[in-house]
Amino acid sequence: MTIKPGDRLPETAFRVTTPDGVVVRSTADVFNGRKVVLFAVPGAFTPTCHKNHLPGFLTAREEILAKGVDAIAVTAVNDPFVMDAWAKATGAAGKIEFLADGSGDFAKAIGMDLDVTARGLGLRSQRYAMVVDDGVVTLINKEENPSQADVSSAATLLQAL
Image 1 (cartoon, rainbow, N blue to C red):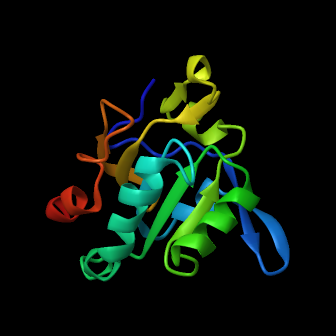
Image 2 (tube, rainbow, N blue to C red; image 1 turned 135 degrees about the horizontal axis):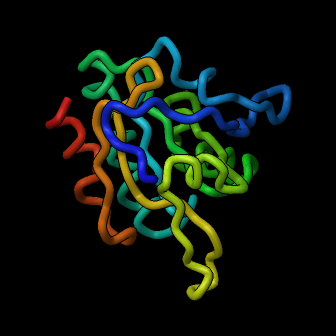
């Protein structure tokens, strides 16, 4: 079942790199008590994700936060070391939360996993953007074509806030 507005996020775990090493953050840790914009990409450093999707959220960060959002986070089916390198390479470290979903548990739990094994990429996440308020999805914009970042873009999300 694919998650939809009104659904509570299921309890899963992300891996996050901190100065003290990799830590586990549960869905509750990330989303409870906060309004969070979460966007998902098929992979860190992949062309659309790296050159279009993430930069849009970084550029629009202050405008999004001004709409009452507490945090912006990105997730991908990548390990925490790749996500940390991507955060640093893009200048987004400390501005956007990078949530590694290395085994795709979160993507699977919300019905947003994407099997691109035929293209040599294995299991990934669909590309989407959502607003989560205290653990409950209030808006979700999923791309029909994962190589596009239009309906899941920061600009589109900002208009909906």
